Image (tube, rainbow, N blue to C red; front, top):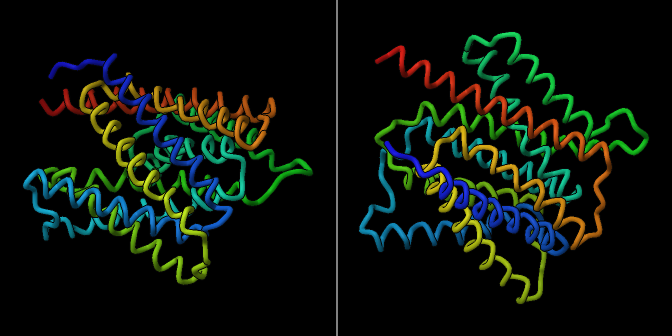
Length: 294
């Protein structure tokens, strides 16, 4: 298979721009809507968009085999990640929430070693510890200004790692559209249940227009991300996802006047470096496994 890494990288950068813009809009509308409402209303619109696109393409909107237990479990992990990330986003500076959310490769490597019993050498353990050092730099748990709410994006990263492990057990013959559609309706239903628990507040009608933007932007973002993953090598395009951290810092400064501290920037750099190393080592491991089987 031939790859076009440059074109793939451009798609990934554009996708992360859309996804980070979505995060900024979500943070803005948390002034009016609670997290459950946002998850439900945004999820409902994404649900409709997916259903319409599949119908236009002549694809079945729902397939019984999409109820495979690992596909459902993956979607539940996505629901957990969404819930914890948006809660953290509503309480923390956008740059802090986004950066901590990108610590998922660290948890993925840790779970691969402890749960999947994959062989992990000393060098990989050192990178995992380095990544957690970056998390500690950002959260700064021993300072007087430390806040427990940083746990939300960290738990989100843990759920993302669980989601990425679960996808390994989803049947390969299940179309990506069905995986994504399952994700959409489970997140929508989960958000709806949580919104009932939180209570459904009132808002002026113009605030609901933001959800149209959210649905379109997020759909475009995920679509471009899928295209990028298919066009390029994962080891090459992986680091370009971290452009989201730069954009989050920029949005935070321009919109909310959030100025990143030196320790936050240092922690972000450590997380990015450790994440890139772990992604590269995972790519090499998969390549070696494929060669061993051939």
